[in-house]
Length: 158
Image (tube, rainbow, N blue to C red):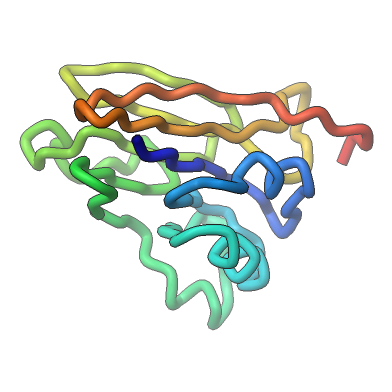
């Protein structure tokens, strides 16, 4: 069994609740709008990390982060991008089992034509009345993939 932690839209704020949730993951995926390189360093200290650049990620550090990533964790292929509206591949035809995105700040899980689409929501500063959240994928030994989003319990409104 593999546990893959999903996080997005940190916008420079890596909450302790998010890092606690990600402990023990076999891999972490950041869906963009990272905020600064320190976020990537902190996440990479927890588990191997794949991250994509979001529309708010600018500067020299961000230029080293790709806009999309097609990668394998265990026996499954994942595709990560920040804004799902900019999906530039047919994930099913490419053999992708999971598409990870961010941007909307709205956590969601949807299955479409055999592909699981997961947006972990925003783990950074709260926007509007949306939850502060992360997600996880669990890949069973049989190759089955399940996902869940988790609302982080935060005290401050930021």
